[in-house]
Length: 326
View 1 (cartoon, rainbow, N blue to C red):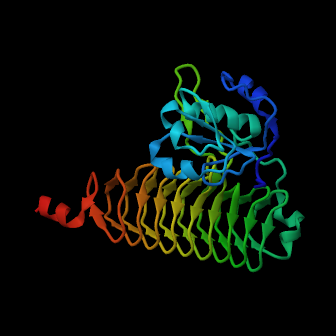
View 2: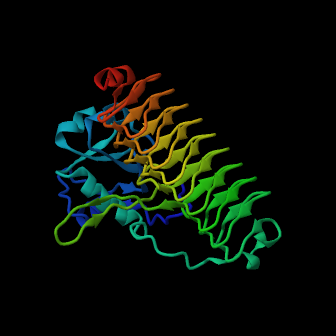
């Protein structure tokens, strides 16, 4: 799939790619070319993917990727059509490989293409405040408002009937219709993904985007990180309160209500109709079911099944929590 925000310099020869990132080519791969890097679910037969945890074994067994960077202990989950590249550290290796395909994805530089909105095609189409800057190839639908000092960077797409507040920065994002982005939000920045190193921390490239679906509201001073390989997605009619942080790769379902100062670690999935009280924390790589209620201040560190109410740290069934705290 063509990424409108980051330039892919592929295809790359698999043999040369492995040499460049310091992987021993034990299988003697030579002629194949890889066109892109992708997650297990999205990869095509022209792509390279990665598989680092048994939690993703079902996806791994169905992947269409031609190559997969993985651990020897996990390689048996992959289909025969997928050639295995065995390494010691999957995520670090994948970071190096992704950087080869997308060399400009590690650092978020300012958008040098931005112009004052009064000098763009939107001056007659959009109601706007002072000092609004618009990047190259931005698309904005009908009946939209943009507040003072906001920046919409290159290639961003905004649907119709949207309201963008003041002091908002939007990059690497697709916004559907009737979405309200309140003052002070930052949407589409790189995620907090890196490998600690005493001399210099190694950044993980973030080539995913943010997708905000119809009829959503994003509260003041909230931050939504773009995905690493997959996208960060906010479902239809989901409302976020103020000062919420959503990390890379999270998938938030439809009709969710999330109160102020909730924080999400990366790569968790929320079902539909989820309600979360203020100052709760959601750990990474979790699956939260449909119709789940999470009490304020809770710490969620494991999966939650459909139609469940939880509270506390670690979060437990609400009835158990009340019984334990009488």
